Image: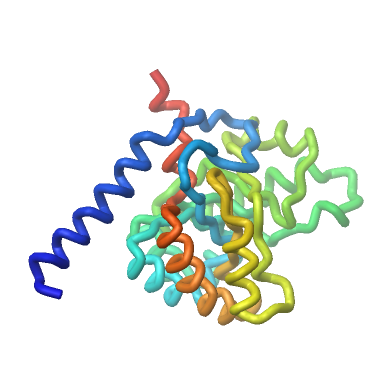
Length: 238
């Protein structure tokens, strides 16, 4: 393809993405609010990654750059302390960062009476790690294991976080990369929030599945982006 034609294609793709961002409904990121899906009147899928940064994060960043896609990375504070340079790479590449606690506590199994205090400590310690490594103060929270109760909303409100869940994810389950890709494709819908992982155990299957998912769904007219595409901070609300 001639260079000029490639430039036209690039500009067309970018213009389409910006048009979607401009026409999506904008919801308010009010501390304590909970969202389990995005706006459903456009073929837009919110892309999120949990548990990182990890060894596979740079490969995932390369894939996202190839497809000109940005995502939201919910970082685990202990992983940020372990891989601060990779955490910085995520932000440098233009991606959004959220808080995923410091040690990924499973509150479904946490029976101690100080759960609220423990969550506050986890969020504060993770936020400090993220800010040290990236300069970003996160305002989005994804609870480890998807745990949510009314008291979580109270803590999130006090700590200044909007809670974001997901509508579909399966990359932690025992399946091939091909089966995984097809599962995400089948569950694609306007307003979906896809959950993937870039940290924790090896994410080789996720790395292999992502291009298949992007190729298939982009051909079907879907675009992808981070939570900030449709969730506006309170400071910007007039």
